[in-house]
Image 1 (spheres, one colour):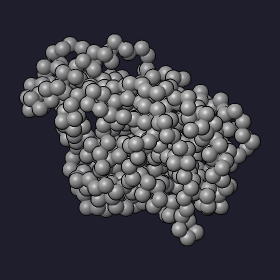
Image 2 (cartoon, helix red, strand yellow; image 1 turned 180 degrees about the horizontal axis):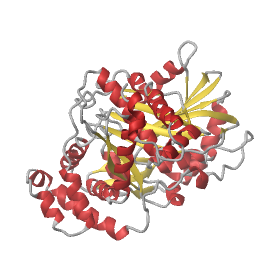
Image 3 (cartoon, one colour; image 1 turned 45 degrees about the vertical axis):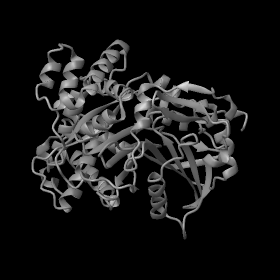
Image 4 (spheres, helix red, strand yellow; image 1 turned 120 degrees about the vertical axis):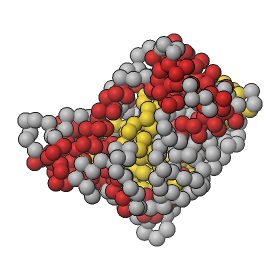
Length: 482
C-alpha cells in the first residue's frame, strides 16, 4: 500500500444518507456516477497514476471499502489497497471515435464495481481523437455530484505545468438559488416524520387519509411530506417499464454558453430554465417519433438540490435533496415550455421539498431492506427521469499537463427510473449527456441529437423578438412543434 493510501482511518460509521445510497444498488440501476474527460493531447498512464496517488488519495475515504451489515454500514480501510486495480489502461477498437467511446462508457456504466474493494475506478483510453480520454466511475455512497466535482477539480490545474492544484473551487460552483442556511433542527424533524412513515409504509400508503393526517401536523415539513406522498404516478410512456441491466450513454455537440445566457435574458429566466426546457423539447420530439400521444402530458424529473454550503463540499458525503420538476412535454410552443419550467422552478425554490426528501433518504438508511425497496419504488414511480445541471469552470483546465477539451458525466437513476439527463458547462460551452436503460431507450443518440435543434428554436425567437421586452409565447408559434 502506498504512503497516501495508508492514511485512511481503519473503520468509520457511514452516515444514514450515504447508507441509503449504498443500499439502493440494484442490477438494473447501479448507484454509480460515471464521467468522461476528453483531452486535447495524449495522457500517459504513468502521469495519470501520479496525479491520482498525489491528489485523489489525499482524500482518505477513497482508500476505504463500504461494508454493509445487518447492524449498519461502515467505511473500512482496505489493507490490500492496490492502485493498479483502480487506475486501468484500456483501448478502443479501430480508430476509436465518439461512437466507440460511447460504447465503452456504456459498458462500464453497466458493470458493477467490485464490492470487496474501494468503489471507484479510472479507465484511461490512451488514443482518442488525437489525444486521450478518461472514464471515471465512483459509487454514489462516497459523495454527491457537487462534492465529486470538487474532488475532480482538485486533480486539475489552470496551467499546463502541473502545480499544487487549483483554487477554482469558489469560482466553479455557484449557489443554485436554493437557501442552504442552518436547517439541522428541521432536518431532524423531517427524518423523524419520514421514519414514522416508512416504518408503517404499507399500511399508510394504502390509507388515502395519510396526506390529510400529515398536513394536520401544522408544519411546513409535514405539508411538504404530504404533498410528496400525494403526487400521482408519472404517465405511462415508453420511458417507463421493466428495466434491463444494460445502459446506453450518449452526448451531444456542445452549445455556446453565451448564446444560452442571451436566451435566458430574453426570456427573463435562468440559464437552467432554458436548458431544461430544451431537454423537455428534445424528449417531446423523440416521444412523438416513438408514437406517443402527448397532448397535455407532463413528465416529472427528479432534480438534485444542494443542501450545504459549497465550501463544505470537499468533505464528501451526500448532502442534497431531490425535487420533482415538471417537464411540459405536451406543450408544442418552445417559449411556453420555458415559461412553465421557470414558473415551476420558482415554486420549488420557495418550498422545502428538497429538505423533505433528504430527511426521507436518511430514514430509508435506517429501515429494513423490505421497507427500503418499497420506499424506493414508491417515489421512483412519481418521475420518469433524473436531471441535473452542474456549472463548471469557464476556463481551460489541465490534468497532468494535458488540456481537458470536453467533459461529461452521468448520474445514476434509482428504483424504476430508466433515464438520466446531465448538463455541464465548461470553458464557455454547455455539454448535454444522456444515460438510458437499453431496454426502454435503445437509441439515446436519437434523443441527444435533438437538444441542439430545440435550443436553436429558442435562440431564433430571441434574436427576432423585441430586445426591450421579454420574449412572449406568441412569438414562438411559427417554430412551435418539431
